Length: 258
Ligand code: COA
Image 1 (cartoon, rainbow, N blue to C red):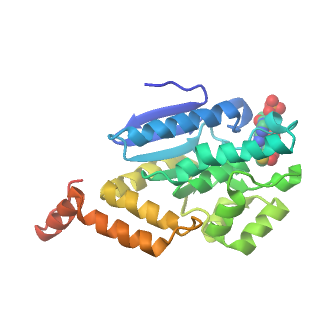
Image 2: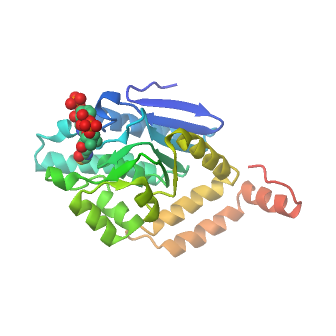
Image 3: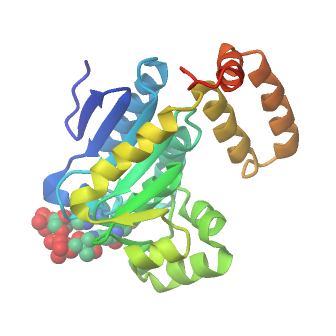
């Protein structure tokens, strides 16, 4: 098994638990950490015994406090563009387009690139102490890892614009109210809630879930006809053994075994 410097990875009962681990820097995303996330998600994609991934931050204070400001403070325009493009392609889009569901368990500060990381996951749950925001304009820059797009898609243009321009952090409760997260629990219960949700999801066909994730994502892809994608994916499910098992189990009044 690959070992990482900035990621703690534990695999158990078909779930990969991934903790971002840069404790002295509130888990801020530097280039080395992003490369590790890239490598990890590529390898999880190939691991047939892993059905779902839970991403969280190590420690009690932060999920991820942003991209590592010290690392890009001296960059020029060209380097800035490369930083954003490379990060989007190799990590944030890779996670968003994963055919295995990815749950962000937001256990503290999720700021800047940290919130963008959570936004690239398919589902977000948070602990009551979590604080979320995109403070980039306070640094003279804008969100560069998909935040201007994904936050607006999720909570609406007006609310996203307000958060991005004001740099205001929202509480877990407010995040729940606007649909930024779908569940808020105490910090002690966060990982067990993630496990309960993961187990519920894993009862269902992973083939169908992969198709569903791609079809949902199609609505946000330029030049992709989402309804057409849905029709094709719907049809393809019929040719998969999990469809036979799911429908057969229903007819035989038993639980499907996926
Ligand atoms: N990049 C680099 N280092 C960061 C960081 C980031 N995004 N966020 C936190 N750190 C570092 C701090 O510099 C500090 O390092 P040091 O001990 O070597 O000085 C360490 O993590 C602890 O952070 P600190 O600021 O002392 O903790 P705090 O409890 O006082 O404040 C925050 C917590 C999250 C409010 C504050 O760290 C913060 O505002 N971070 C930046 C958030 C941000 O703008 N993110 C967007 C980046 S694009």
